[in-house]
Length: 340
Image 1 (cartoon, helix red, strand yellow):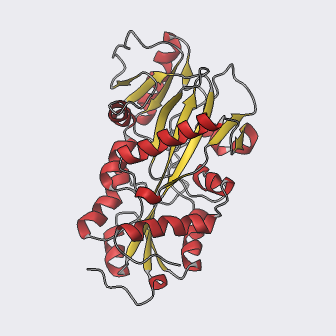
Image 2 (cartoon, helix red, strand yellow):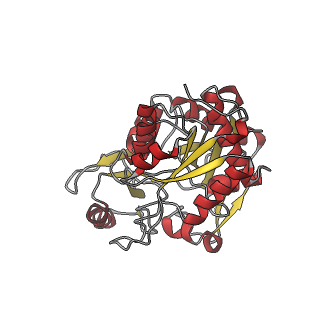
Image 3 (cartoon, one colour):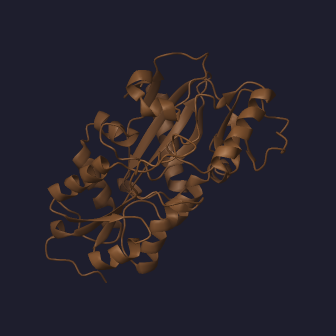
């Protein structure tokens, strides 16, 4: 059992993270998933504002030593891991093994969700609509005959739009082969190809667990320039979002369509057994059907930049309150007293 001090607000919280180091590589987005020190400090300050004592635990090769020395009651996890398809599960698996409580989804959910094709395969068995797709493991593999251009090509196990450039949507076989060769060379992993869905784009955040889970009002990503209906939320767009997009919340949807989208998001959250918080992306086709694109059960929390805190702010929940809600959701799961 974890021994806690008399006041819940005196929890010692470990903050697990991976930090951007300014590493230069063959691709610009090599550190896209990692956090800046500003984000780490924003979360630290938010936790300290509710009386927690915070230990910074960078999730590098000395993580275990730092964890042993910190004697934390719970870990607030935003660590992305150091490499491999299961990297987001590294820290949760260690914490689960040691019996240390932590925020966010467990290692199994994180492993499944980072594998885009595996997630789609699972969700389609629950009748969640997703674009037709195929996982391509090598350049010579043939495309399914029922897949129709335009197609979008993306690395199968990346987040933060890593590997999704402005060239990701292809219109013919020549473009497809060229992009596939480039992506295999740069990212060294299987590629997910799926039919591109023209239409509108939405992202939906969820916070909490069980009956207390709250689905935030969807946020629409509205592109300032129309690229023949093939706009995508690429790495370039996210990096300079004020130039390329506007965020609209609530979106211009009928009450029926908005409820439908929120219900789908809640179902996906339950099916994948997400915990505490997550964010998922959808495209709405011209015939008003919502297609699931992908989910991030470890969404970015950079204030003023990441989609998740933006959604919450649109819905009247300021940043420090979001951090508190995530922490309290985890504390309640472990039978620990929430902070007030």
